[in-house]
Length: 482
Image 1 (cartoon, rainbow, N blue to C red):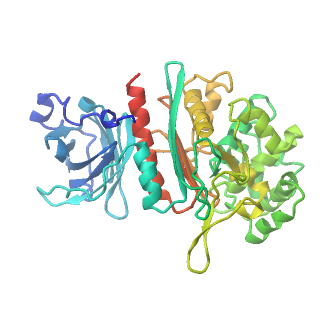
Image 2 (image 1 turned 120 degrees about the horizontal axis):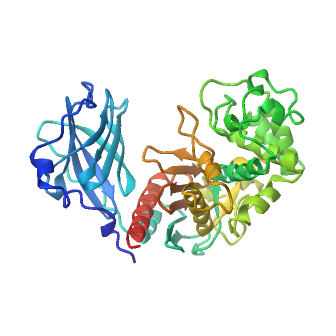
Image 3 (image 1 turned 90 degrees about the horizontal axis):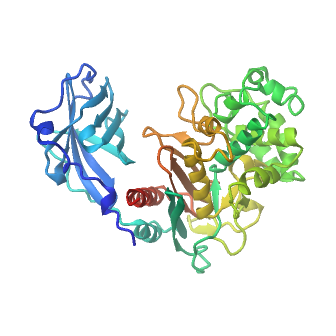
């Protein structure tokens, strides 16, 4: 078992005496609004430790941080900005960064980054008050979080892991707990297949990137030109939008087809035939304002790949993504017999039930480009690490560095890139669910690191959050040992 105590750098041990003796520097960039000024407190769950933090925000100077459980000495920020309702400040002495924004609930929400990013919420405190001791159990190591989370949250099976690159060696860990279903007590084990839902979008985007580099597609091609054969009668609102707009949710196209048209997909003779129908139906949908989550956009992107290559999307994914990146377990549809199954709640009584392996255990097969992949955790992490390394210029054998980075770059005023959500700490993340599973994948664009967690029931968000945090801390520890 790898200890994660060393993954949390001390918040106070390396602070120079003068740094806190003379307080926080004056700053013209510190202009907090009335609702931001004052004393704030909360709990930071990091590695195997839960710390109580206090933040003091004042006029004309950068905030001061206190770690109540580590000496409670003032730790002044020395760079950054404080605006009317947000702050982004750094603490050079401890190599930390705090990014917080005042929410409509009256609390500060954001991240604390010190090697890795951790979520943080601070609530207003009275003068002189400190947060109460947390009732939240300290995070255990990855094994403990998977095992305890599976039992505590009554998840049939849960898996979590990480993958890092140390020198030239790719290292990782997978931890699994639970049974294949609530009725089949066969233990789930390492290397099995799990459904990853909308994490498939980043895989589809990777395929599109390969075809862009080959000159078969381009990010800025207009949809009227790209779909001239498949959708000649598309609504005029879509005609001048581009492929990049389509895949980042910027066309205004609604997220899904109508329920009736979704159900009609089951009558298609093949997924490819279904996608041909999907294209015409999607381009007839009246656009909405603002960003719309692009389920439709990714199905259409898959259909476009088929149109320019003459090959089925599923075959293209094997040829262009799964085989080159050595994702031997990747495929489409619900995982087959002998693997964990997804679960749903019965309409009467809410009893958890396995959904089996048939067509009813997943979305229509034609929807695969938007959310139909299954894969093992080690292979999913290999995919995530490839994106991490590609962003850092270390996978030019597969895609150009600028192409990798384009996949990870959202359009202006958005945090949604090509199947990845850019978080405030700079990490890239996505989750996925067909409502019977829940999966998360994240990678660091600056460090060779990827983490993932999956459960075979939908309402497992809290458990996966803890597993992801434990996996991140353990991965950071492994890198720190390099």
